Image (cartoon, rainbow, N blue to C red):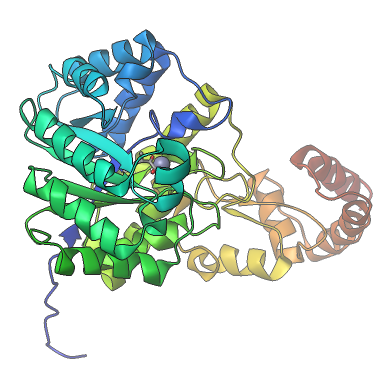
Length: 395
Ligand code: KIV
Ligand code: ZN
């Protein structure tokens, strides 16, 4: 024992920007009605996100109405109006978010050659001019302007710096560096933020946001690298829903920070106890099932089949669990009874049903159980109860 007091360094606050209702809704088949968006937005506030991007106001009257209703109802959260670098889009986003107590506008325009040449069919100079003029236009209405050079991670550094410098000069206050096609590696992505901040005139006067896609399964890792490179915002979606393989998963990032926050030196405003309810709501409303093995919220995320693991868990949960499922609003950690289960798990489950087995009964049950488990993958609780009955009757 020592008398040393440990001094806790204050953690840096990372703001979670939720785009489930905009980029997440771009998941094939995931489209939402305005009423569904409002219901999810209310839950996002309970969950503790800092920014909500509720839709793309110019895209349809329904989306305009949803963004407007959410802007009017939700207090204590920043609302983001999304727009291409086009006057009509900006006007719609300004109008739809007009009643939000706190808002920003998010403008985007591609910056990679592949997008400029094949999609925009413009010159680089035209892209810089358009970015500059649309930021200046938007700035007349809203002070907080987020600018996204789309496909930034496949844009040559020199041109990326030129675009970012131009929009900062016109008043952009938040620079998002989107990894639009999920191409970046964590180290590269972190480095890109450091380089932009260092190399761009005005780069140290703005805030930064990370926006990652999961095509290579790296969205959370890339977002963590961006956090280590100093970003203030991370753009996420519930259950990682979004275009193709989706976006950075809110619950995975939030729990990585919650679990390893000491190592990272950061924290979020997320209330873990609302995670499971939010995940369920989004999955149900979007008709998008969650993979059984999805971290944090998947059916198997807190289930244990191996006998050794079950034995360890029954002695101390931390042996095989790094998060407490009950803190996430998940009813209880489940032990799945299957061919890998050991005597200890069987005895424990029988006790949960009020049956205290003696040694001989346990041995008999164990043998019968293994036969059943070998024949099928999982032994359900109903079958288990039947086996207990048969075992104790015959002894
Ligand atoms: O993935 C992307 O590039 C986007 C931007 C428009 C921010 O969703
Ligand atoms: Zn995106």
